[in-house]
Image (cartoon, rainbow, N blue to C red; front, top):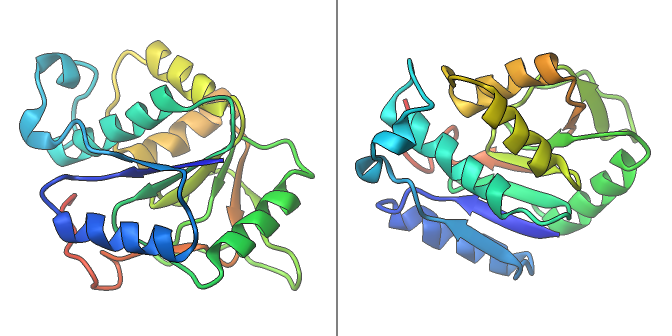
Length: 198
C-alpha cells in the first residue's frame, strides 16, 4: 500500500504538517505530488479543461499524476490539508478488511462538508452513488488504470475533481463506498488552514 499527497508547493506549512502526521502514524511509503502548481500550467496542461478555476485544474492534474504513478496495488490519496484521526492506521486496515468483502473501486474516507451516511453499530463501510470529496480516498488495485482510461475518453473536464467523480461514477458504473466515521478531516474546513481552491 502506497500513500500519495497532492501538494500546492507555496503552502510549506501544509507540507510540514502532513509529513509530521505521516511520521506519527508510522507511514513511510509515501510520495508528495508537487507538480502542476497553478502558476506553472501551460497550454497543453489546460487543453482538457474548461469552466473551472486554475486552482481546480491544478488540483485535478495533481490527482491525475497520482493515477499515472499508481502501481497495481491499493493506493491511499490525501490532499495536503488532511488531518488524520487517532489510530489512523489501525482504523484504515480495519476498514480495508471490511470493504474487501465487497467488489469496490474507491473508498472515500475523508470528511467533507459534513457529509455522512446513516450508520449502524459495528459497521464502517457503506455503498454510495457519489464521492465525498478528495481530501482522502483509497483506490483499489487496478482502479488507477480505469480512471486514466476514463480521462482519455472524456473530451472535456468541466468540473472540479470531487464533482467529476460523482459524474464518472454514474457514467462508468464505478463502485463507491464511504466510511463512517471518516479517517481524515479537512484542515481547511476546521480553520487549521485557509482554503486556496475556492
